[in-house]
Length: 371
Picture 1 (tube, rainbow, N blue to C red):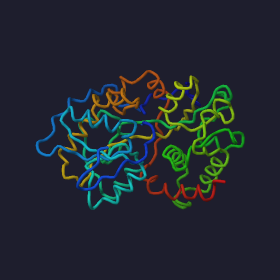
Picture 2 (cartoon, rainbow, N blue to C red; picture 1 turned 135 degrees about the vertical axis):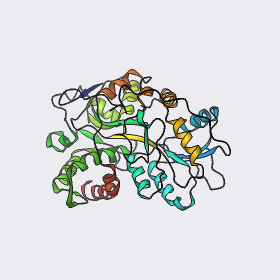
Picture 3 (cartoon, rainbow, N blue to C red; picture 1 turned 30 degrees about the horizontal axis):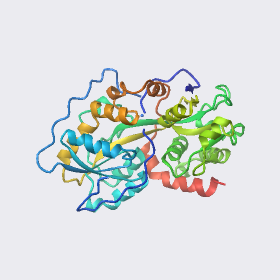
Picture 4 (cartoon, helix red, strand yellow; picture 1 turned 45 degrees about the vertical axis):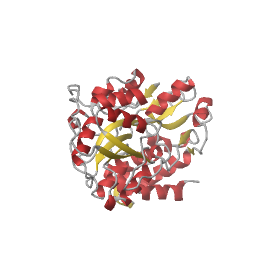
C-alpha cells in the first residue's frame, strides 16, 4: 500500500468505519428495542470518565454505526461502567429523516456515527445541544463542528485506490479532477451514487467550483468537470466485484474508504497504491451529538465524555478496526492504519454549504449525467 502524491508526503492525520447495516426494528416512545490531521503531539490522555448521575440511567442512542456487533458491544461495555443504553441502528439517510420527523416528540437522547452532512441538517433544525466534551481539546476539531454542536470520534479518508500492476505512479491521476480527462475513460469504478462514499467524494469535487451565480451554487466549469467524471467512469452495480475487476486490470482504479482498502488488501493478499492529492481527500467523520430536547442532558453529557475518551475509543478501535479521532487512542491502532493516515490529509470542505445543496447536486447528476 503506497500513496501516490504529487509532491512531498503530507503531514499525518487520522481517519471511519464500514458502511452501516440495514435498519433494525424502530422503537416507540414507550419502549425502545435494543438493538479527519491529528491533534497536537502534546495532547494528554483523557481523564477517567466520571460515574453516571443518579436517577434514571437509561439513555436512548440512535446510530448508523451499530452494525457488525458494534451496538451490542457498546451496550455491554457501557453497562460495565454504569451506563444503561438502548440503541437503534438505521442507515444514515433513514436515520436523519427519522430524527427530523421525531423533532417534536423526541425519543433519542443522543446520536453517533453520522457524518457532517447529516449533522448539518439536524443543526439547521435546531435539534442539537451546544456542548463541549471533556476530550474536545484533545482531538483535531478540523474534523468537527466549529460551532460546537457535534464532535469527531472516528475518521476515515476516502481515496482513489489503484492496482500498480496496471497503473504506474507516473500515469496515475494526481487529483480527482484529473479523472475528467479522456485518458482515464472507463478505467475507474464509481461506487453507488446513493451511498455516502460516492456522495462525499463528489461533494469534495463540486465545492471547488462554488459560484453564487451558478446552477445550485456551482459554476458551469464545475458541472463540466463533474459530467466528465461521471461519464468517464463506471458506476458499480449492486453485487459487482469491483475489487476483482481492479485486480484483473479490467478497471484498475476505484473509489474506496481507508479501512476498506486495508481490509481487502489483507483478505485478498494484494497490494494497492492510492492517490494523495495536494488539496487533500474528503474524510468521512463519525460524530457524536446530544439532542436539545433530551430529558437527560446531564447523563448524556457524561456518556459522551465517556464514549469519546481515549480509553473507550482505543477499545472500540481494537475491537472493530476503526481509526479513532483521538490521538491517544490512535497510538494503539495497527501499523498499517497509522501508515495510511500518515500519507493523507483532510480536504477543507464547507459542510454547511454541502448539506444545503447535496440533494440538488445529486439529483442533477443522476438525471442529467448518468447514462
